[in-house]
Image (cartoon, rainbow, N blue to C red; front, side, top):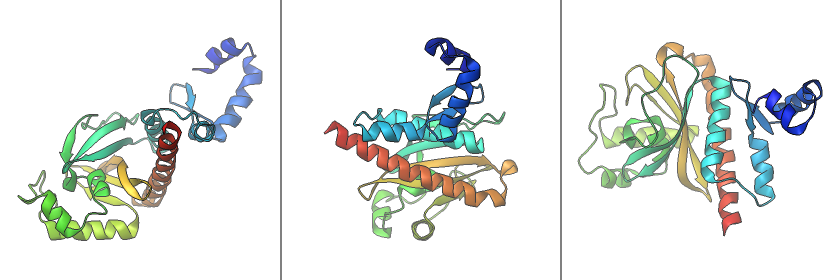
Length: 230
């Protein structure tokens, strides 16, 4: 809802309401999109979880992704591992004119994507061999080509706390991703896809930190959701 809509609904003058909404947005109880519409923020979802009235998991995921996109203006995804592929279950587009082609419900080989590698982070070399008995078919010239190389990348991902890929699934796109854990197990992953011409190395630390924070918060919310619904 926009400021005018909320003002009418609550019968509060806009001049009185605006500083309240600004404070709630700064505190992350609300968030605001590029059309000046307010929607529920992560702090409110956390309060709802504590009260035992958590939103559906897909709502939590969507709000998390929206906040990332609001901060960095790059397309963000949530995916899960389905067999040996990553299934994209949520996507929030950036406001940039160049958009990502990968859509919700789409699948790609997990080894070729940043989000897929995040989902595979805990897999051993033996588990990867069982998952891909026919080897790794390349999607681009830069796709990882063999299990030992993939296993080495996952070892690095475990050490760094995030996974990545550069043009392995789509030319001219790089991706950072972090696994979402519940009770220690990976249940999904969040990622950010960035066209190479918009990427700046000095942004990397902030991107990774934001993805890690989002993954932790989302894991907590999904855990609380499960406990509430038991």
